[in-house]
Amino acid sequence: MTSARSPGGRERQRPAPVRPRDAASVMLLDREGERVRVLMGKRHSAHVFMPDLYVFPGGRRDAGDHRISFGSDLHPSVLHALKTAGTRQLTDARARALALAGLRELYEEAGIAVGQPAPSAAAPVPFLPDLAKLRYMARAITPPGHARRFDTRFFALFANEAGIDPTRFLDSRELQDLQWIDVNDSPSLRIPDITAIILADLRSSLDSDPSLPCERAVPLYAPRRGRLVRTLL
Image (cartoon, rainbow, N blue to C red):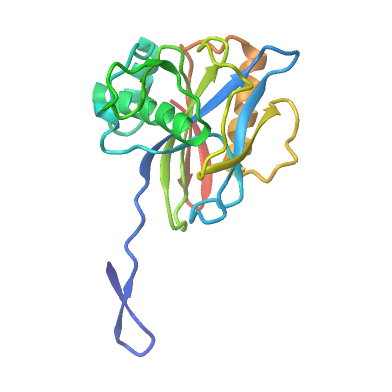
């Protein structure tokens, strides 16, 4: 807490600034039809952060995510970008934990497991996450003034590359009304501003190269002097 003087001269307590927490989100893409579609769902109305808005599956990085065993590692270019894209360099374990958090959240929020079954029932998730097909697409930091702030890394994953059946997903307590949205349409759903920006970036990337190569410049959206500034990392 910080203090400031009230008009009467007495000190009053100001709430401490909310620091962004690491988070990850996965844009699961279905390209089997004529158009590419992305999976989105509505956040529960009880959420403090972005209630009733449609988003990609995702959430904050948990302390135990770096201990999740995985089946295959990130592409070297993706791991490098996660480690170096920012003001401080991350360790391999912390960078990898961001991707593991994204796949864990995809499973918890949509019932989609990306990887082979885990050999032990005591594993944190019932599968060995396959990180190799993840593309690192963007990073966005929630501006000040929100009750929750996140430093979110956005990943893209093609369902057919990961062996995912696009008809098999489940609503959860976290994310409801899951549905496939054509990335080329302006969604009629209520979505956060940053989600609309990331969708526009995704469209541009697909137009440039539909394979979404792992070697790519990653846009960072960060608050600066009251506005969101885009920087390529």
